[in-house]
Amino acid sequence: MRCFFLCLLFLSIFTSCVDREKNDYKTIETIESKLRTQQDLSNDSVFAEQLLQAYRIFLSSHPQSSKKPELLFKYAEVLKGQSRWLNAVEIFHQVHDKHADSPLAPLALFQQAHCFEKLEQRLTAKNTYQEFIRRYPEHPYIEQAKGMIALLQYSDQELMQQFQE
Image (cartoon, rainbow, N blue to C red):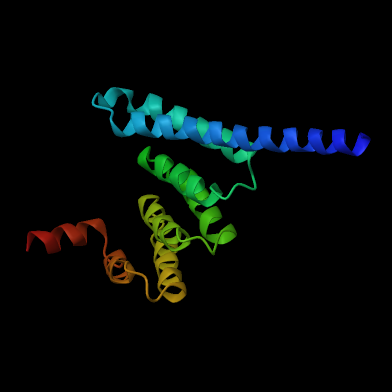
């Protein structure tokens, strides 16, 4: 009888954790949906902050979730959208470093290189694009990465002159 009650207690705790994860994920989906359908762009930052908070809550509450790589990637994308380049770099790094088997890992590395460009860290961006090419030689973004490396050798002024010519 005692074993039965212990099993019942364990089962109720387990199901409540699963329900909580589903509810937390639904919260994220709701905010994402609101952000996508936003017509008044002045509210974008409000929804973006709500979404970042929802990502943080989910990721800290459910560290073993199978949705973690996807949500980390989305989290970094929102940070990137807010021009929070360094924060985005850190999160993209987590995706491709700690979740290398995720289909999002290659794109996270590519996006990390782009953030380094925005931070005007050209050498780091170049090295990151080269790492992307080395690690994912069959990825559809290979040609883009090669093109970005070629562009990184020019200053902004030199690029402007080339486009004008």
